[in-house]
Image (tube, rainbow, N blue to C red):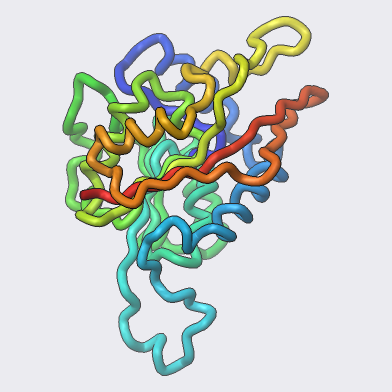
Length: 260
């Protein structure tokens, strides 16, 4: 999941702001937001059955004998992946995670983290790319077969940074196999982040939407052809983002729908 991430549908001023902010933030992102990231990972794992994917068996539960037989393939597209929040959360249940992010800095952090954990590229890898540029329906960097037929496409805290979330949902739906699931984590509707002055928050300049209601997300999923078995769940008491002395509390939702 994009941890607190970003991606946009056309090469706009917003896209440039996203790229420069998140590229700069990449190297300190995991340490700065460690508590928040872990909180969201824990919630995703708690509700992984609710997401509705026919997951691969958790390898920890396999016996010596069964590990010799091939495991069912379950592939995750982690879009606007950031440093890999969603990939880490769903790692026990999938056989391959492919992250895509707008910024080379986040891609590098994602890949460095995976290699440091001893996870091979065949199981977890990120690439730089933009799937939601309105002027490029088929970006060449994401044209290979490996970027299609996913069991699940997920965006963690990324939709509120997209210029056109509806287009994002459509483009992600195109990458799913029939019956595949689109899963997003984002904020409920809220007031704008302050962008400057004493209580300003640097990431605020990259925000284009102040959260999403259940009705908005349901329509977005239905219009994208992923409205089957739609559900929207508000998670706990929300999450707190701390940036130095500043604290921002946001209520978070999970939404999921299957490709018709």
